[in-house]
Amino acid sequence: MNLIASFFPLIIWLIYSISAKWLDGWRPSLSYLMNFQRRRWVENAVHRETAIDAILSSSLMSSVSFFASTTVLLILALFAVFGQIDVLHAALVGIRPDLSSFDITVQLLVLLATFVAAFLAFTMSLRQFNHFCIMLGAADHSDEGDPNEIIAIAALNTLAARNFNSGIRAYYFSVAMLIWFVAPLASIIASIFIVMFLIYRDYFSRARALIEKITKV
Figure 1 (cartoon, rainbow, N blue to C red):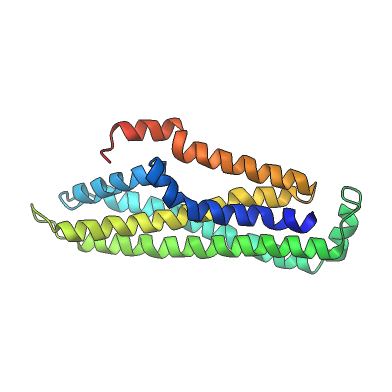
Figure 2 (cartoon, helix red, strand yellow):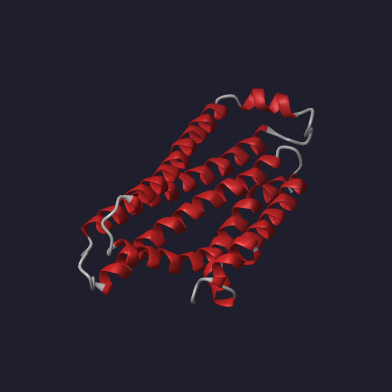
């Protein structure tokens, strides 16, 4: 039960990430709808000479950079905990008498894998946003513009946002992984609740409904 509960949030996270594209075919998600707004942004950006696009891009990159830096600190903290397994085991025995040092080690490895994946997603997102900024600055600012160039720049923004969302989901499911230290069943229930929350946020939230009204899919 401990092993099943350890890997359950990780498996559910991967399944949800893979299924997201299929779900978009059934009902466009908030992220899917935002892809059209990213296209509109680029279409408008290539026809104006203001600093607003640079400010917006900088804000996006700052958010991603913050999460990437925070994730590095969490990874380092987990490495530090690996050197104190016995101390952690002694502290948790009062809550979970059934726990062994092996169970705790496995759970910490799952958490470490989750945050490493999140870090890779955030750094990839940061790199893609950087490429987006460069291409947006180098775009043809003539009256007509290059449609293929606009599509490519918007697609880069979409890729960056997709990786950022993947990293954020890792944080959501890490909460369920932490709950494992209280009870394995509670971790499984928390994972299911998080999936339901993500489905609501992406497919049925008020924000999605508002954006859908002004988006032509």
